[in-house]
Amino acid sequence: MASPHTDTTSLGSSAGLLAKTLREYDCDPAPLFEQAGINLDAVDDPNMRFPTTRTQVLWGLAAEATGNPCIGLAAARLFQPAVLHGLGFAWLASDTLQDALARLVRYSRFINNSVAFRLEELPATLDLVIHVPETLMNGIYAGADCGFAVFLRMCQLTVGKAILPLHATLQRPPPACADEFEALFGPAIEYAAADYRLGFDRTLACEPLATAQPELARLNDQTVVDYLARYDRANITMQVRARIIEQLHDGVPKQETIADTLHVSLRSLQRRLKGEATSFKELLEDTREQLALQYLRDSHRSIGEITYLLGFSEPSNFTRAFKRWTGKSPVEYRGRTDPA
Image (cartoon, rainbow, N blue to C red):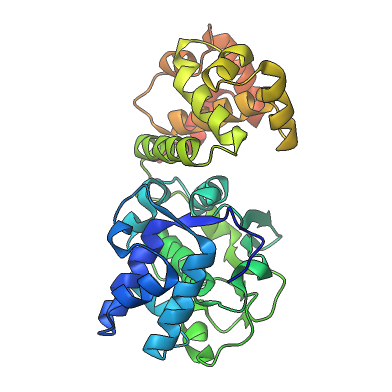
């Protein structure tokens, strides 16, 4: 199947989820995987990625073999967070649903490197917005159906109840099994829209979660960052972020040192970061801010310990930076987020 997205890849474990679904239908996945050009024996390898064009062919073959136009929703029902590896575990350990969705957006290239994710804050809702290039789907919607349903399932697992979005839109045309979509996403669903969209109540999205584990979330974030730094080498932003996190505990990393570890010149590093609409200074600030928020939610770390973990020489320097980021001191922020 021709596609301009020749470098587009998807997480291999999603193909493993489809293989499991096919077996539920008493359908041998092996010939379908062979026809699509995907190695069935490799789907359990956590480091494996497959060309999205091939996985799209596989979804089309699966829908035909099972006779189920809702095969994507059927696969989502078998989903477990481990399918998303570190991202799934970090998502479940997030502080709020908004925090979890922000993680999904931040690390979306882990799932697919050509699909655009963003969050929109509207007056009543927080919307997860996903745009899949039509040329990538090429008229086969089961894979996108599965991903969209999985993200809703992860939100429900995170909150701990079967929440429904206040509104949902899909890029796909109305399916033959529209009743299944309505049962899953609720009646406020729109087809043939510009984007895939899940709109959650903003108050609900900001409520602290009883299952929050900031340290566990941070450790799994690092797993995802390391993965992307290895396998998404074209994305210099992710590689630089990974190096910043590695070096912060020894002080503020220097651009020149980061460039050396990536085997590029300083000028090349700056040019490539500019091409991805960022800079070393912006990445350093953002990485420090995100880590500071995570560390402060983890109450067993002292302000002094956090200061040095973030590469600041004095607590007063950390306090000034944190006020610049949030408008609050670290002590004030920790008091606000204290569940007691």
